[in-house]
Image 1 (tube, helix red, strand yellow):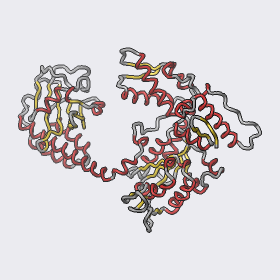
Image 2: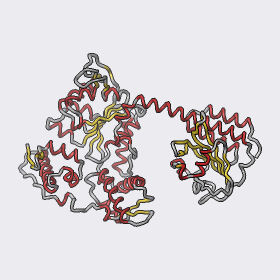
Image 3: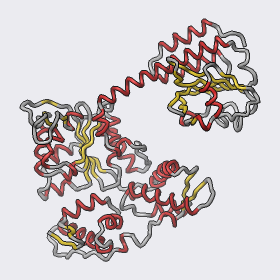
Image 4: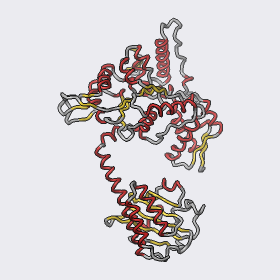
Length: 522
């Protein structure tokens, strides 16, 4: 191949200068390289420690960008990283090619072919590599070294620019590290997608889409495990505030004595232990969304404090004389029936109406039909990665069992059931790439089922209200679970298939407590 045209290289440089985003620059760079050098695949990778991460690729399977190439496992890439000049590999090189099976122009193992790698340096430090592959042997052998050095310089400059922009973004995020710390794990973990095709899920998605674009306060209701936090995240992401912070606060853990400080912040010296100014959740969420989780657990005295802030849009940090305005959208979630709590005098009616401008009820898993199998596929794929298994599948009997089960613990229970089943199946299935989960691994009908608990006392027909009857039944069922579990809250929560913390709060509300292994009521 003759020397690369200098005009073409100038066009490449100008093209890159006009690109607005790093990904756009990478794509244009690779397209320009393919114009200059005939090849079947070209990839730009950044060096992250001892691993190369693909940033953009042309000519490779789409999943190539999701791979990470450890240098100790890929000697060909390691050799490129150890070089200071463009490196051409001989056609009969014994080093395995990292792109075996990934080249779009060839399925299966790569035959004899041409392979070349360009180390990318910035300030004498290796920051990445550019690799080129062609099914035509010797096609790279006649390219002048000077031309390759120029392409290396352009690629290195492109990568350096992208890394610098990323570094600037990182520093900007560091300046908002408090917001990062407050982002709840449940709102940032994998699975930020509402999975389901059932009619009730389509209705839920339509409601989310309808309310997301407004600034209405939203109250998300539903029992534990249905995915209320995911609904919150989806509403925020679809809202006009999606580029602004989403700040989480657990109302159940909000101490009554420090509630104003947590919500509105405080100044230095405002109280014992206030050694510095500290912003509250409202200030941190200014311009964004404040997520009030478990709002039904909010102490009554704190409810009035919160209501004043919602009504006026103004806050006053503890220890300061002046007030300041905040622009915050409120999304609240609860597993309680707040209308019943209002009727019982445990929740302020005016706060309830302020929060429930647009109420959303998250459907139970048992009402979602075949969505159970879609969710199962999602959880199994994630579990297979955690357990380093190639594939996890469900037998037909297991699928039918999942569809027939009542799922009192909803989506969270499904996730935990499948995680345990995958572990058990992997231990009982020897030397297999594909692990199949059967009914026995699910263990949905065990002696630990709620049905095995001593019969709870059915309330008398003379009970005056449904609420009182329901509370009596809940109290008897919890006491029965504690009896079977020998007063272990953890085991009782497992038997009742609820979260332990929620069980403890429910028991406290019903007047149940344990003291020195003896159950008493107060």
